[in-house]
Structures are given as C-alpha cells and as structure tokens.
Length: 390
Image 1 (cartoon, rainbow, N blue to C red):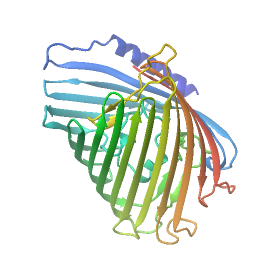
Image 2 (image 1 turned 60 degrees about the vertical axis):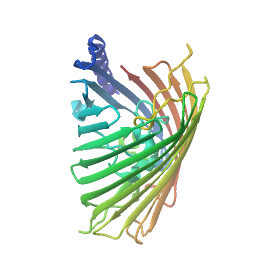
Image 3 (image 1 turned 120 degrees about the vertical axis):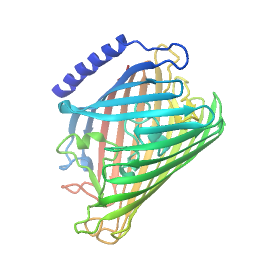
Image 4 (image 1 turned 30 degrees about the vertical axis):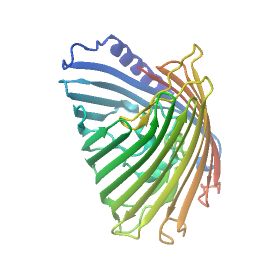
C-alpha cells in the first residue's frame, strides 16, 4: 500500500504539471503539444482456484500510471509518446510513434505501438467495460502488445468500413497483423459492428506455455496467487516456431444497451506437436442513466461514456468467458490432452465525469480438471478499481 501511495503522489504531480502545460492549437499545420495521462489503482480479493492454498487473499496495487504526450509536427505528421511508471521506479516506453496522415488515403504509423487486433483490444484501457479485458486474450500471447519491439502499420477508414495491416518486430517474434471491420449501421443512436482480425508470426523458440489469470490481475501481484496453466511449457528441445491467430468481432449498440462478443483461435506449430487454443466471450451492458457508448469507424472501436447528469453515468454489465487448449495427449500437463476454463463477471461502473471512474467486478471462475495445490477447481474474486485521467 505504501508503494501505491507513493505512485499516487507521483501521478498527482504529473497531473499538476499537465494541467499547467499549454496546448498549442494555432492555425492548421502548426506544431502542437498535448500532455495527459492515466492512473489506475486496483484492489483484488480472491480464493479457491485463484490462490495456491484456496484461502481468501487480497492485494492492492498500482495497475497503471502513464504519462502521455501527443500532437502535430506538421499538417500531416503527428506523434504519440506514452511512458508507463512501474512499481520500484521502473519506467517503460509504451508508445513512441509517428503517423503520416493523408485525407482519404489513410494513415501510416511507424515506431513503437500496439498492433491492431480485436475489438476489445482496440478500446482504451480507460474505457473497457470490465476492469480487465476478457480472459480469452491470454490465449493470444503478446499479439496485441508491441512488447520490446517496433513496427509499421497502414490504416484506412471510410464511412462504413475500416482496415489496417501492419508488420512488427518484437523481442522474440516477427508478426504480420491485419484487421477489417464493417459497420452497416452507425449513427448517433445505433451501431452494428462486424470485424475480423488475422495474425501470422514466426517465433524465436516459444515453449508453448499458455497461462491465464482468469480476468483477475491480482493473482500475479500476490505471491500466493495462482495463475492457471492451461498448457505447460515443453520440457524438451522441441519448441514452436510459428503461430496463427484469428478473431471474429461482433457488437450491436442502441441507446443504453450494448451487446459485444468475440471469438479467437490460436495455433502453435512447426517444431513440436501442434497446440490449438480457442475462446469466446459474450458481454451485455446497460447504462442505467441512459447514456450511449460512442463508436468510431476510424479505429473501429468504442469510446468513453460521457455522463449527461450531475450524478454521473451508471452502467451494469455481465460477461461470460470460455477458453480452452488442445494438444497431443500428455503435452498439456498432468496427462491431459485438453484444458478449459470459464469465467462469469458481473460489474458496475460509475463514470463521475469524463476524468474519474470507479468500477466493481464480481467474478466466478471454474476450470475443467485443472486444480490448485489443494484441489480447488473453482474460485471467486472481487475487483475494485479507481481510475483517473488527466
């Protein structure tokens, strides 16, 4: 908790500096600078399969503290820089990219930035409906995170369609990622989104281990937390050299109601017996105060809910995740040829204004024959997050 307090002070200092910074918004084409950031403070409690001993444990931690700078160098040349502040004073360069944008011809990004893969992944961590994104993304490795690497991406948005294609060089992989989305209906009141993401990569000797936090980040922040192993690492010289991934995207939103679902597939091959993973989630959300979740075809993603009342915006949601892995008998661990898990999340979000949000999630997880040290295959968790942006 002391670490959280120290980082909260740091973030407050950064916020004060950002508030004093001036944004240059002169005539079109003049250089500009915008400074902002985000602070996510989180507390999780969990038991059962979420912990090694099955007992209830709790941990508070700094989920994100990020300083962001963006702006324009010339009329068509923009830039973005994000720095994450980690516990212990460590700093990580999250984004450092240049974008060359030509009206009606698209945008070319070069530098360090997250690949464009999946609808939920495209949404900012400030505005995802759940505190954590669906557990199905644990099946896709680092495909939606640039990690220690860089890349180039071209994206083009029209009135109803969006597409992007990019190539990325990471510390232990080379990937090509493409995404296409179509919004046959998109107006201020209603949205229908259909999308497909594809990725292919060459790996530098991946051991094939697939683990999941089952949508509770705190299991990695506490030594007693249990991060479920759906497929163990190979214990021989056999490794995986290729991966293929795909994601189908669907969403419909009308007024205060939104329904969102995605399904992902992952295949590791070349060098060892193939390992196949698949998962899906279904999410239903309702804004009690009537606000609509905005959608933008440029980026094919949802944005933040903007409160229209003095009491802020209140949202409730439910999400069901299911994920599984298949492989050669015995290669997943414990003599298994498959491993599966599912998570039910029920939550409430309070958007006090466009800067402050408070979220509470209650989770129930169950695995298919994968247990902790005391034989638990099910568990409960409660996550609480206070987040601010400036």
